[in-house]
Image (tube, rainbow, N blue to C red; front, top):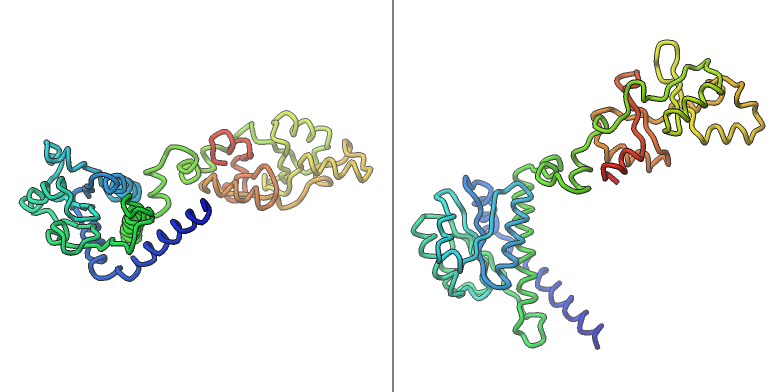
Length: 318
C-alpha cells in the first residue's frame, strides 16, 4: 500500500510537470524578456507553500546571475513594500490567485508601474487579471489523496520557476565561470575557480634530475621532495621523462641494478603535463583518466612546477 501510494504521488506530479510543456508559449517568452531586461531586481512574493517555492525561485535566479530576492506579502503590507524600486519586476505566486496578502500588494505594484508576472493556477483570478504576463501553473489534481495539501501544484510551480531561470541564464550567456564567482564556497566553487598555478610546487620544491643522473641520486630527489616522482630534463632544461615509485618497482622486478643506472634508463618518456592556467578540476580529471597522482606544470617547453593529488585534496577540489 505504501509503495503504491508513493508511486501514485510521483506519477501525478510527473504528469503535472509534463503538462506545463504545452504552456511554454509567447507569455513565457515575454516573462523571460521582462526578467532579462530588468534594470532593477526581481522581487518574488507568495504566501504559504507558494511563498516557500518563491524563496527557492528567487534563490535560483540570484545564483544564476539575476539579482533577486523574496518578499513576504504579509510583511510587505506592513512596510516591506519599501523594498520595491521603480526598475524592479515582481513575480507573484498564488495557485488560487486570490490570496488576500497578494491581493493587497497588487495595487501598490500597479501604482508604481512595475511589471507583474503572475504565476497562478486560476486564469480568471484577481492575480491573473492584474498580471502583465500570466504563467499558467494549474494542475489536473493534487497528489494529496484529500485534494487539499499543495503537492502537484507546488511541484509544477517550482518547475516553471526553474524553466524561467534556465531560459534567462541561457539568454544571458551565463557561463560556468560566472556561476563559480557566485558560489566561491565549498567544493563547487573550488572546482570552478582554483587553478593549477594556485596549488603547484615551484622552484626548489620541484623534483628534477638530468638524464645522466645516477639513480641513487635520483632516488634521493624523489624521497626528499616527497611527491613520489621526479622529472628528468635534458641539458637545455626540457622535460624528457619522469621516474615514479612505480617505475622503480618495475625496474627492480626485472632484476636491474637500479641504483647504478642512469635516470634516462629508468624513466618513462613523455610524462603527463598541464598548463599553469588550467583549472585544478581539469588536473584532477587528467590524473583520474591516466591513473596517476601528479602532473608537471609547463611554461612552454620548460617545467614551471608540479601539482600532486594531495594538493587537490587539501583545498577540497576532490
